[in-house]
Amino acid sequence: MAKSPFIESIRADLRARRYSLQTEKTYLFWIRQFIYFHRMRHPNEMANTEIEQFLSYLANVRKVSSSTQNLALCALIYMYKNILQMEITGLSYSYTKKEKRMPTV
Image 1 (tube, rainbow, N blue to C red):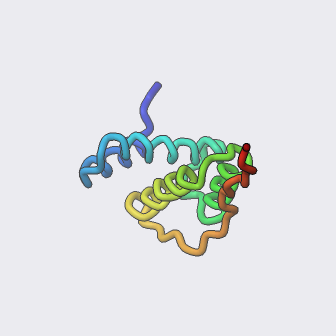
Image 2 (cartoon, rainbow, N blue to C red):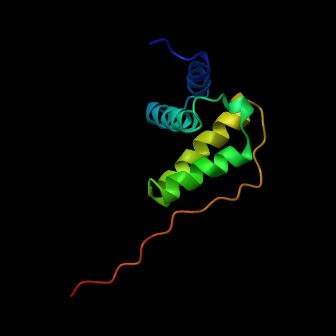
């Protein structure tokens, strides 16, 4: 399978900025998930609404932890800010809520 030039440009930028290999893998994972979630649309065509939908999906459907949701957000902000030179502000999405558990005695 051919590698995406867009993903490879993100990888090159991460390496130029000397991000760790694990951060590179994680950011690329979440950026790919975002693109797949929106049926392979290019991020240039998307903005706040699509980011909010993806983050809400992570919280409500996939039930990821708040730190995982925040990590996905950081990856998307990195992509928009450093690769696409677009500013992302004013996001409103549902946060992951920790379940309250009763202690067992």
